[in-house]
Image 1 (cartoon, rainbow, N blue to C red):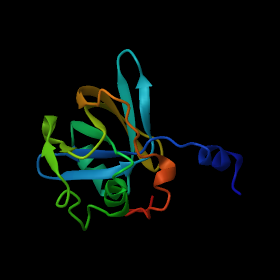
Image 2 (cartoon, rainbow, N blue to C red):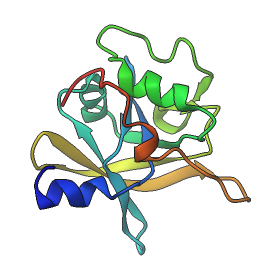
Image 3 (tube, rainbow, N blue to C red):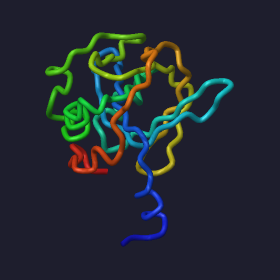
Image 4 (tube, one colour):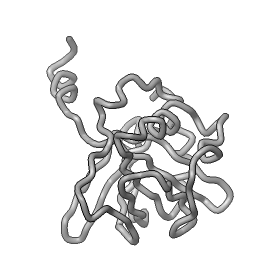
Length: 161
């Protein structure tokens, strides 16, 4: 049954994101469940990346990250970026993408995305938070339905945290 905190977090159904990074020599991307807007004025967003994840190393060397909302019609993207590790698989080989600001990969088949400059990092455990200042983005004019946490609970992490 778990602790009260475990039961509390089990009730949450936040969006999940694919976060991508580039450091000039390498690209990386992973599924992220810990993220959210943390300031309105100035606009800020934070994403938390597991230190065990291949993408963490690329993100730590990157000045910008891209944050993508995945459509519910593309659970395969969540499986690819959450169920495989960039240590042994080129996750970008089988998906459509293009380089965005600062070279970060922008996935083509997503609901929306933004690129943020990394303005701070916080190491608070097994994940590091990357504080982002939005510099570019794309979102539909109409309402979108992104993939959420409960949609991906069956994915076995490529790099268990």
